Length: 155
Picture 1 (cartoon, rainbow, N blue to C red):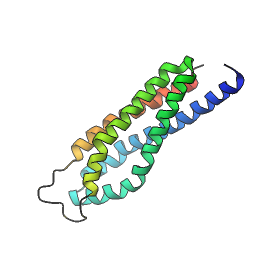
Picture 2: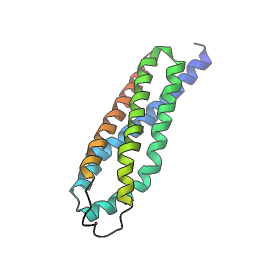
Picture 3: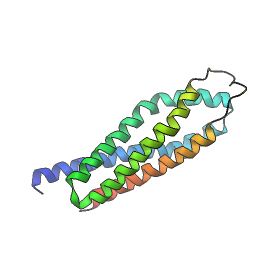
């Protein structure tokens, strides 16, 4: 590789390590810190807290995950030496997006559609399913971060 292209690849690799690390860190922190508190709340408290937390998470997380995925795809094409690690990271991040959009986000929308106050009598608490799917996407995000970190230090 020529010097200029190698420098660009190193910069992109650093950026993807940061963006995938932020995504993994947010999901991990939520899984071990925020989620146990939400799970322990009364349904009405949970709904109110879920609505508040989503204001920051919802717009930011897709940007971080999609950016990381796209950068990993670019690196997989541009850097044969680290291709396998970048492909692994991109696939894992694609899994994060898939689980988020097909499992967690629909639950989020249902929770956000509820009025503040008592939950409906027929309300089916989604916390167990949401938490299980969140663990799946957290695991995938951590796999991507480890793969990106390994790619960054490989040479």
